[in-house]
Image 1 (cartoon, helix red, strand yellow):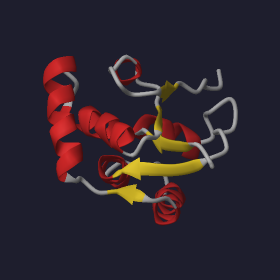
Image 2 (cartoon, rainbow, N blue to C red):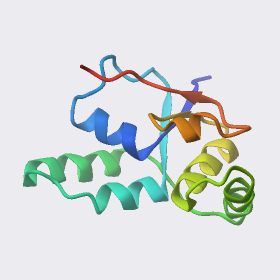
Image 3 (tube, rainbow, N blue to C red):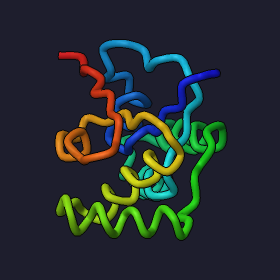
Length: 122
């Protein structure tokens, strides 16, 4: 059985721009609907960058905002004082039993969420 990973927005941007120092681990990948929205609303340097993101989103499963994810995100936001988008991404990761791949230290410290912090090229 493949390990499941949830890609946070910041790491998705680093991945798509070639800024990760190592390849992402092998496994089953998904993103939160919040990551999709953040990626689609990002200001791109070129039309090619925007196309690359659109193609990426078409190939990766996007997890919708379910009542269960909403409830957990509310709890995480209150208890950990996370920003709402971060709480939704962390809750998506936990509910889908996926390891969160993030470069955000606050999410890495959120209780109940398994995280991997990839290194960036210098």
